[in-house]
Image (tube, rainbow, N blue to C red; front, side, top):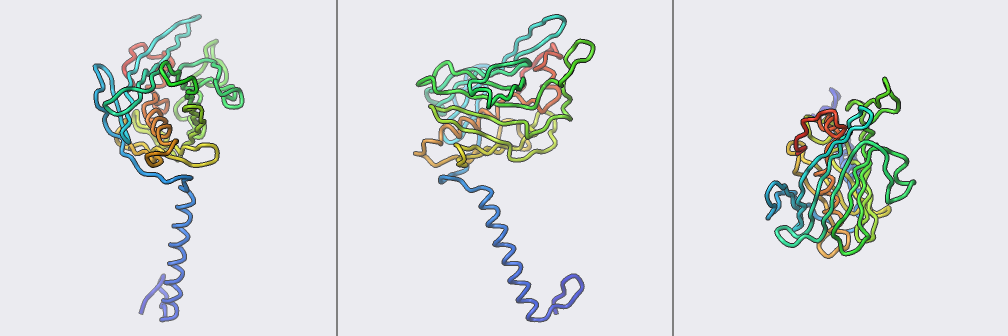
Length: 273
C-alpha cells in the first residue's frame, strides 16, 4: 500500500499519480527551455586565466579569446568636494595572440553624454563607459548603466551618496556596439553580495529581441564564471565573449568600499581587483 500525505492510494491512484508527476516534469522542462531559448546554437565556456598578460596587468579568457586589463584611478577636488575616476585599460583578442581591440573604460560621479542617445542614457549620472582607441573601425562602444552612486538631493551643500542597501540590480543594464551591431545585457538574478563579489549573478545578452548569450559569475571567485556563447563561426560569438568578460572585470559598485573609492571618499585608493 502506498500513502500520500497519510492517505492510502490504490492501484488506479498510483497510475494517476504517475501521470500527474510526469506532466509536472514535462511542464518544468518546457518552462526551463522557454526561459533559456537561444536564437542560435550555443556552448558553455569556462572563464579562466589569460596567457601573455604582462607586468602589473591581469587577464581572463574564454573560448580562445582573452581580455587583459589594468586598473588605475585619479582624483579631483572642486569646492571642497572630492571626486574620483576609476579607469580600466583593456586589450582584447586571441588568447596569447595579437590584440584586436584596445581601449579604456571609466566610471565617475557626474553627468555624461551617451553615444547611444538620450533614450538609452535616461539622464542617469552613473555610467561605466568605454572608448576604443584601437579597432578595425569606429563602430565600437560600450556603456553600462549602474545603480546611482548619488542620492537625489543635498545635505549641507554636499551631494549625499546612496548607501549600498539602496542599490537595485534592476537599475543595471549594458549596451554594446560591436562592429556596428548593437547588443543589450540585462541582469539574470541577484544575491546578497559578500565583500567585492557581485550582487548581480550574471547577465542575459540580446541582439535585438534574440537571446544570443549569457554570462554567469562565480559566487566564490571575483574573476571567474561561465559564458554561454554562440558556436564558432557565428558573427555574434566574439561580441558575446567580449561583453561577458567586460561585465566581469567592471568595477563592482555593489561593494560599499569600492563605491567610496569611486566617489573619492577614500583617498587611499587601492586596486579594485
